[in-house]
Image (cartoon, rainbow, N blue to C red; front, side):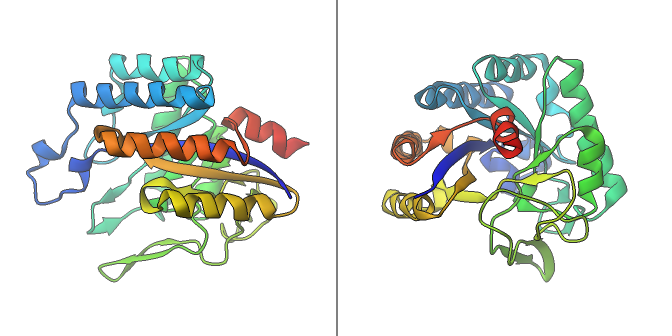
Length: 268
């Protein structure tokens, strides 16, 4: 039986972003509603002592929306409570074109977020690509930005949309590993540690989550994996209840930690 560490992560996306038939103005987030949903995240995370990561959305639609003062205050509140904020780039023209392999474009998107967070006293330690996108070209960008954890890996994922490869994690390890420069799906010598997805709350039943937790617990050695939800989940009381029950269930099989603690465990 192994020692299990969970990292509860929330991608800061909202429903309307994905509805491309809506006019662009209606796809943008509503400030008051998103504030309310993030506060719900913070409240629910108290069941795991505030140890969670909110991945802050950026995209061509809203490159800097979540840098507004009221959101910066929420990101600061998350850090004070024991959680963390992360960089979450949906660098795409949704369902039409994907730019995760464009190094210059990704560098601009990632460094913009990192620099803005640090200007406001925040400490971003982690990254996740929108739709779990990732390219080896992103590795040096993260290294130079001082962001040493990535959460983009869903082992086995191979997403193709409109004939375009969006995300490929075939053959990737199911436990924490250091990425190879030449292939993000393989262990290697880069400075970026990958925390693979272990539990996807909205896609799994509570029964499936229980079975997966037992399976991970049976693996030998130290296991560090992520648990995924989205901000839009917190608009539904049913989903909030499911997330709460999932977290309480997972606490029986492991300990919830934040990114600072992940790096400390990896260094042992």
